[in-house]
Length: 308
Ligand SMILES: NC(=O)c1ccc[n+]([C@@H]2O[C@H](COP(=O)([O-])OP(=O)(O)OC[C@H]3O[C@@H](n4cnc5c(N)ncnc54)[C@H](O)[C@@H]3O)[C@@H](O)[C@H]2O)c1
Image 1: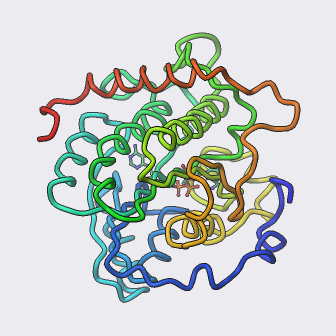
Image 2 (image 1 turned 180 degrees about the vertical axis):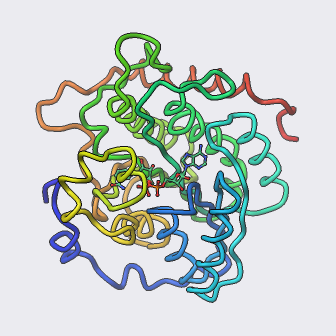
Image 3 (image 1 turned 90 degrees about the horizontal axis):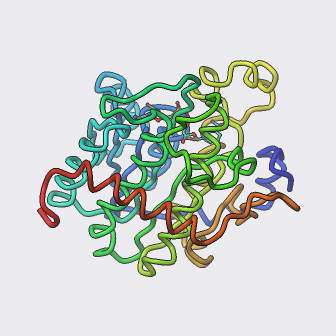
């Protein structure tokens, strides 16, 4: 199986029984759930009876998605939360409130962006970093205590195979130096998500962590952020549902948690996080430093007291 491999050939090895599960009574949170892979994931979980919390930035678009999911699946337990993942204060506030009101079995960090120019958020954070790395870090960290209360708790982060070209670089998290290349910044963020997952898996043994590549799927993000790639590839891209398949498998199947925590998946299989002979391996101290720096960033944006 190559990482360019199509869904049809990969899916020949899938066991359909893995997905024949009823997750009624379990609670799932999906970020960026109003379109693409996130919406397809939310729909498949809803079909299997799960309670789904959609975390989206835009209220109008999110309400349309919520209605579509309820109508198509008949599942009424679909809830909406409006949060901008690139806004760390908002993420903290949301997570701390959510912790007091709901239970959570599975967190799916799907929201992501590839912004091709160096844009800053209102907090002065580079947009890709704020969304893909810091937002994912804060949301997960803030929800770990809630996840830790449940049996079979899982965290799944939607990364990208594009991360394979990047070695973890902690020296310029905000892309302040050199020429800005959005594709490479995105790939670096996606590498950081892999490292986060590995580090979380080591530190929190009671929760099962995975990170994954969805395969190249025809979604709004690919159309708008990678127009040249889209033009070349549009006839061989996966559908959104095919891109969501491994996310859903990691979220609902019993098979997924029989594998160790902390792995990188494609097409329902753990795959290498480095290309053969690549010099993308990083020293453990850089990986630990990334966690420490993100923790420092995250605490700077936390307004309330721990435990409140
Ligand atoms: N489609 C692909 O081929 C592909 C390949 C590799 C990785 N991915 C990853 O899959 C994930 C889903 O992307 P997609 O392809 O379905 O595209 P998409 O544009 O349909 O989905 C991205 C979602 O994230 C949301 N989002 C972005 N910034 C946000 C913010 N600040 N706050 C809240 N929500 C925000 C968007 O609103 C959208 O719903 C992303 O993490 C992307 O990097 C996609």
